[in-house]
Image 1 (cartoon, rainbow, N blue to C red):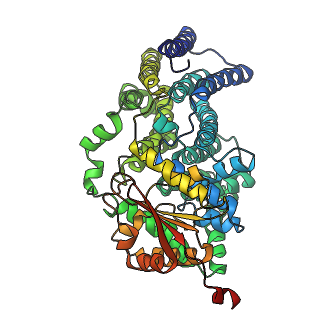
Image 2 (cartoon, rainbow, N blue to C red):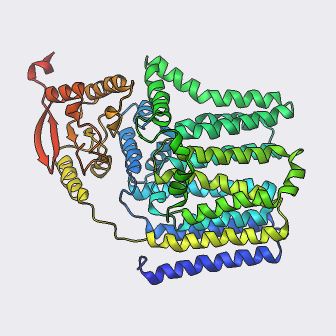
Length: 547
């Protein structure tokens, strides 16, 4: 019933009438005073509506392979006794992306795609609340509620590609929290060194959710320090710097005590440096990544978010022009919020484009910075202009909602790989226990999630062995060490065309000499399923067991 056309029309009518009511209330009295209690009630109703719409459409299947990566990490962390080591090394250098899912599993949630989507929605809920707190500092409660509703509209019927849990969910929440701390300090809402230390830890931890967060974290930290320096608030400056450095110092001490300091820097820094600033993973030239043509094709030309992004972008261009005289007069005494929000918006665009990969989920970085930027300029725009700008914002949100409803569909395109998955997962389940580690050589992470088996090697996908990277020897060493320590019972060669993600581009294990030799010595081929080769670990000779 929930996928029925009439039910979708009902949802659209609910969203449309709610939007119309919000617009009418705001336009009739833009300067209307909203009490904190009323604002809290309205925000709660918005979020309840978003949850009420999203919850029935949760589906327990993979829509983004990255979700499988993070779920596989949770299974591994719950399996291996050294939890902290596993959290830091079996999470693709993004432990703070995996941690919310891990916390969910510890709270009793199953390690599944639908649970991951719920946790992603929880993080978006936190982001919405933070966004409102930021905007009301300079735009007032009434206008901030309108801006927050436009994001809630988008989240209510968000495309499944965006709904699938990914590193952006935790990243955007953390970045928004850092931005909130900056604005709250700027508007003198806190002065405690304890808060400054916490803010520093938050900003210093951003790279452990996603490397692309680093520029936005550095920007926020720099402006916080600048605001503190203007007030000669040296104590908070020291607390902020100490907090920023603390996560990396502690992690370096942890790795150093184990004699693995190079492992940290190779996997957490150099790996993502080469990923972002070279053509090892994406063949797109660096200059072309920021070309106007790519911006239009990648950011705006997409039914999943194009209308909403285009609406926000139009406002971001038009509002500073229409309110030039007003904000120019306020710029000199109050320049910091204007410069900060502008640079934050530029860095969010940079984060989307830098790697040269057209992954849809990257675009999630855009919405919060665009909304904050528009909120700031709406606050200094003439009332007549603001009326039309708010109408355009809500109209774009409603139009995006109408388009997004088509993605709420129970039927998905047939994928023959699913049939192979069932066979391979069936073999894993029948020939191993839930505590037996498994290695999948390829980019087919969902096999471990479906089989609920811990990964035997720290990287659930192995495409990086195909890159011309100076880190290949380090990854090879890690592979052999993990295989020797974990002794995975099953090794699956899944890097084949039309099955593994980009299986036609990356190398199978027998094209990597050290890996080929290790598998030859320790594993035997027991079965082949539609080209997927399954190896079982050889039993150790009896003599070795007696030594």
